[in-house]
Length: 191
Image 1 (cartoon, rainbow, N blue to C red):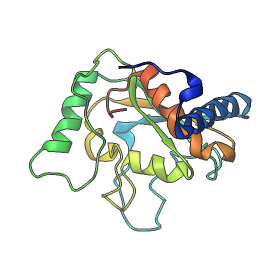
Image 2: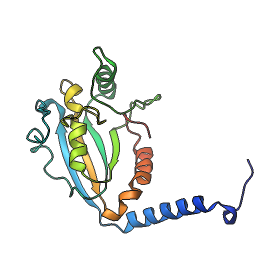
Image 3: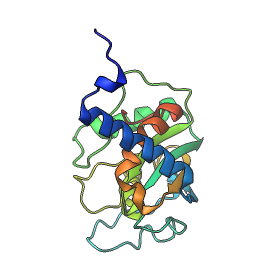
C-alpha cells in the first residue's frame, strides 16, 4: 500500500479527522454527569410489557442523567460467573423456542476474565435504553440485553455506570463508544 502525505488526503478524510478531533476536545471540556445504578438480577420484577407503563423500573432507574443528553455507559459485573452468564445468555438467545426479543451479538473470542458485561451509548433518552437492557421495553424488536428474561435465575449483580455529556456531543458519542469498548473489553456485544 502506498503512503500519502496528510496534505494529499481527500477532503472527506480531513473533515472526518477534524470532526473526531473536535469530538475528543469537546469530551475533554464537557461537564460530564455520572450516575451509577446497582442491579441485582435475582430481584428484577416480572415485566409488564404494556406501552407507556414504566412502573416495573421506576424504583431501579432513579438516578439517571437528564434524558436529552448523549451518554456512554457500561455494565460492570460485581458478582457472577462469566461462563454461567454466557451460558444463560446463549440459551436465551439461541434456545428452543427461539426468543422474539432482540439481543446484542456474541463475540467469536470471549474473554471470560473481563468484569464488564456490556458497553453502549445513546444519543438521547438513556432511561429508555436502560429499560431495554433490563428487558422491560414493550417492543421486543429493539435490541438490548433483556436481563429479566435470562438473568434472574443466576447470581448476577451488576453496576451500571452512566456518563452524560453535553448535548453538542450527540453526533460524536459513537466514536467515543468504540474506544470505551476496546478498553473495557465487554463480555457481550461486538464493537
